[in-house]
Length: 102
Image (cartoon, rainbow, N blue to C red):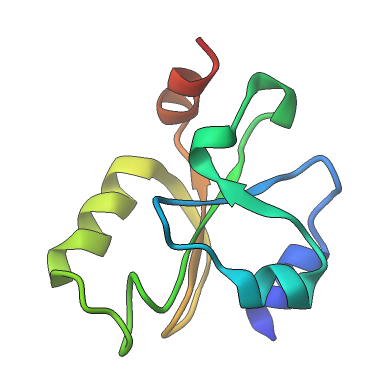
């Protein structure tokens, strides 16, 4: 509920994106928000998009190399805004999202 509440209280102009094929269907349905793949980010989506990492990327359900999440977080995240055992939400680094607007 922590993650759902956070996303529900984001302004409508603030978008949430996932990385790769790690769609968060449960969070999208519970928060009543569209969560899109980061490759669909555009300049019209506004600044400081939120990236969500879920249980298949971190935590007990992951089958990924333990270093995967740390590397992705370091590469993509400017600031962590919410973290628990299964999810991490962060503000994407401007230098990363600017690559999608060219």
